[in-house]
Length: 577
Image (cartoon, rainbow, N blue to C red):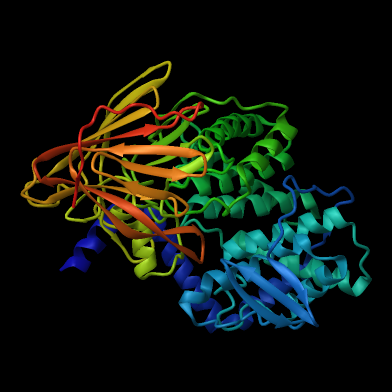
């Protein structure tokens, strides 16, 4: 019965256009496998009849080269993606574990070829030629990783950018082989844009086609530009919210999409669309600044990690270089459309997620983190998001998405929304901001969500944050319910030292200190922290027990100020479970 409920609510929120384009995608895959010779001849005819050549002046990369993905070893290479390393000889095994779903993301990273940015010219040409030889279009499972439209979008962009940057002189045979493969990939992408998925995927598709239209001249390039411009104009309206945050509400994907759009901006000619994109980018850069902890890395909400995209400072530098504009550091952070609220000064940085879990039709990267928050004291991260270990379905994926893993309240450890599979969400919460006021050294935010209304007694969770002079008071109330156990969770950075006593929990990390006080009982429990994909670190979390719903509870966090003193709390003795 449960799977039918999940299916019903997933379909309920899925757009008809997504289903339509998904059916087209499935039909094409079957056609490619059954009549591959027909499609092979069709693409060869296009290549033979068309004259597409590289322009004399080529667009250059906007962002600095990435590194750490590939190393030369003996006569081959060592690849490191998602904190998993494999060695291969100079004939790369591009189909490594091709049928293993759990290995697909690593394999896709191999086919992204972003590591080409850090190799010398000889290896650059050698790896590309090897890929062309071993990854022919329309062969069995050709689109599993190699010709997947997402992989293809990243790879073609790297090829074009690196050829422009390196200025390599190719012999005629090399030029024809690589040029033909690049054009073939772009022709395939043109016909296989990820309209069924949308979101950050389609932005990658748009960027590749837009860049190709600037890189090449000849047949099809005007069509690539037309397709990309039309899609970009439409997607900007939907995907970038009025506050500048990307609508999937992942801070890491926000940075990825920002870079994609900045690169689109760099190759667009002056137009109404370019002006429109400029305005969106301006807002996005401010959001990146708002999302940045004092350690210069972004906060992590929903899917992602601090190193999944370019660092925040590199994003901001690239924007400053292109636009000449600088972002401001906001003391009070109010990103109302996305639901992010926060505060930043020298002593404290807090960011609160008080928005929906994601776009209704695209909640794939959503977590159960409504009313969760991250906290830095000075330059040290203290209260953290669990992060993401992997995208494969299973225990670790479930842990990353679970409400009990985040710094918010649970009822009987049930999730706020019904997460299932690796990327699915069935019933999901509605969120309402009830009150938000600010003053010079603080703010008050009150909000409520109905994610638990599917439980007996239809409980409603409201949470109030009040920050005043480096003391954060958090008050939770469960209205309704039927005896479900209410508990607030706080995940601590693994490097924190925890010193509990009768009347407080003292948390120390280097020179930074916070003190947690609550009249409720609490327990310090083992937990996990995923600082990056494929990396797991033991951590501790504090679980504060409020009692059975309906009920109310609260706790205070006193943060050390710039003089090293700790703000004084008003709570009395604690009860340790």
